Image (cartoon, rainbow, N blue to C red; front, side, top):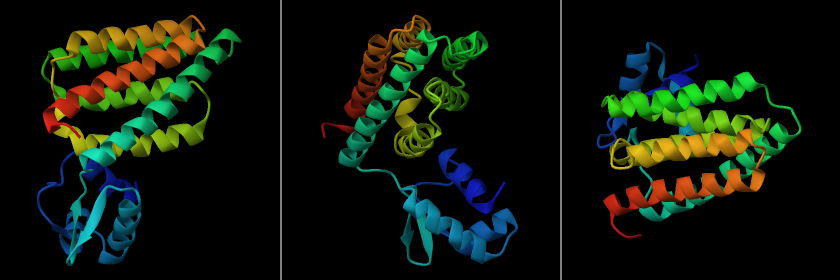
Length: 211
């Protein structure tokens, strides 16, 4: 992995404290590299919206509520379109049954990890599930954009994404999205995906207070 990838993983996984400034030197020592590649990686991560400069170091960036609302809107538009296209590809016989079967298993894993209280694993699997469904559209540009949005969401809402209040409905919504894709129902799959994202946003918004 590159220094950029290593640092991105530290940020998205929550291993870097979002409440404390981190120096380039400490990150270089942690990764066993010089400061130059760390500085270059941090510049990229700043562009990704994951950190911002603070003095001689950086701080993990958590999006403000109004910024997070825009990110969720963009995610809903992109993911809804991707899922719709995936369903159309299924209707044309272009999706392998094994691809959908693996997503069924991933949805079950998200549910199981959440119920078991292993929320860190559940969050990672949930991201993988949604990106996996989007990938069925066979549009790597959309998947790349969604990956960036997902990372900003995870960094900004980590404490809320682990809440289990919606565990039953989330599992049902995941399976409904897959059912509609499998049926080749593009409009239905898109609608279900957008509604699922909106409900998740409402849960997080209630924790933050009204925007």
